[in-house]
Image (cartoon, rainbow, N blue to C red):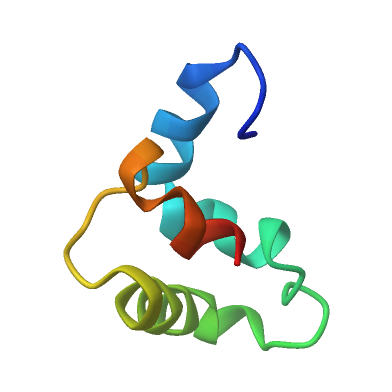
Length: 63
């Protein structure tokens, strides 16, 4: 999503991270569905804390 003209995709990832993380980060097939939200929140908190997903946190998201 970075490196495209689709800035709205970055905003959507920020807004819907909990919902999109299992598919985007490829843990949808290895994690029980009932744990998706908790795992998504832990991942986001670990890498971003309270920061938004935007150009300023790009390296944290793609690294």
